[in-house]
Amino acid sequence: MANTTDDTPPAAISPATVKKPGPCTLVIFGANGDLTKRLVTPALYNLALTGLLPDNFAILGIDHNGKDDVEWRGHLTEAMQSFVGGTGEFEPAKIDAKAWSWLTDRMFYLVGDFEDSNTYTSIKDKLAEIETSNGTAGNVIFYLAIADRFFGIVVDQLGKAKLVDTEEGEQNAWRRVVIEKPFGHDLQTSRDLNKRILQSLNEDQVYRIDHFLGKETVQNIMTFRFANGMFEPLWNRDHIDHVQITVAETVGVEGRGYFYEATGALRDMVPNHVFQLLCMTAMEPPTSFAADAIRSKKVDVFASIKSVQPGDAVRGQYDSGSVLGKAVRAYRTEPNVNPYSDVETYAALRLEIDNWRWAGVPFYIRTGKYMTRRTTEIAIRFKSAPTSLFEDTDAKSMHPNWLVIQIQPDEGISMQFDVKQPGPVVDLKSVKMNFSYSDWFPPQQNVGYETLIYDVMLGDQTLFQRADQVEEGWRIVQPVIDAWAKQKPDDFPNYIAGTAGPAAADALLAKDGGRSWRPVAIDPGPKSLVPGKAS
Image 1 (cartoon, rainbow, N blue to C red):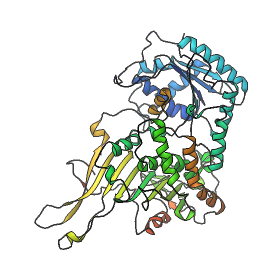
Image 2: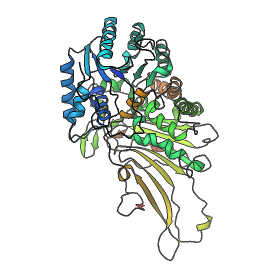
Image 3: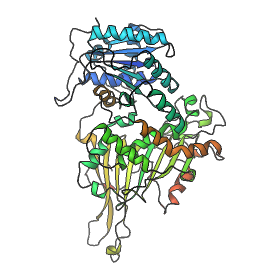
Image 4: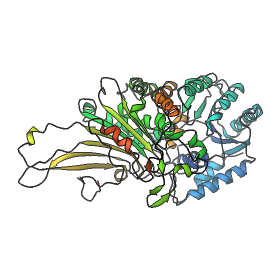
């Protein structure tokens, strides 16, 4: 029997108000892959550490590599130990032995080819065995931590083997499938994949995951907007001039040349990560926090966005340069990259939301590799106040008002506004008022997957994309994908690694009434209102 003598997850520190998931088995396809090692396993460990895994729980890893239970546990143990004192998303001071032992005691492994029907027969037999030994009640999550070319194949095989039939197992047992990105590579392939998986699954069984939505600051956007009466009345075209969403990275393709050559920055980041941030910013208030109420409001946002035309899009590719003081190579010299590659590592778009709230307010989004610094932020620029009141004063200018939601790093919210500078004359000074999560709440070890895995166990689809939302996201960018495929860039590489991107991205905003991007470089900005705090 796999269970230890202590069947209660260790260090159970979760509040009494937090609902504990019911019994289940988590089946991970791609058990030896980077995603499982780097994010899924640390997330499960963190959930075990905080007592948020079911008492009756098991993990079944599936992959083609020849391992057994003991070897797989050892492989993951080595990976976890390698993270101690690191600098990545998971960087614990130490691994809690009791929590990790509790988790590894519930780990099992099967060797199998994803395309072979015999694999699924073995899975079915093993799940029945685990249900008896670990009391998992027939509830199963199938996590597809695999290359996207296998998504349809695995779901087909699960359907043929009746492994996703909710009639299987004990009465009221459930079966759910988690699918990673990319969900398609364009509008047609996303439609084809949706059609294929929904032949074997119901929509309420499908959890299309985007780890950005597992970040605490992203989840807080709705709370910030709808729980504070002072913001929502200003959140519209009458008061907002424009919105900028930036996802800047200081890493290159990190050895993923094959993947990036087939994907590029637009496909990799915009229809999923960036558009999720846009939806949370622009959506109407839902009637409740029920999953379909929230997801329907997100789809409404997408449906109101016009498809982006090529003239409102800019692409870039990094050249050699210096990032954070370290010399880096050009994209075209990266391993497994075509030396004449036309693939973009930077994308910027101008979007319009044609509804009553946002008509006439441009949304600018940008994302890129090897930029000046790592930052993800949503910046709302408010319209300027009338200046006539200050015409006869010493105030030389009025500064823009910004509300900035910082997603990563240094999660928080800041507001920038003008105040009178002390003295006998009227002169204006721009200042910032900051809220930082780290100042108010104790730090929590989190890789972004904990909340998402926990929600799958509860059957809460709020933070997961519905089929229509995925397809709408691809619809918006499809004209740009088509145009870029036909028209090769003649200026690549067009930005130096360690800078804010190509000059054409600046021109995209400049032609819109002289607007400009917020600086990506580390900028002290106006002085903070909080003594001793940096702005």
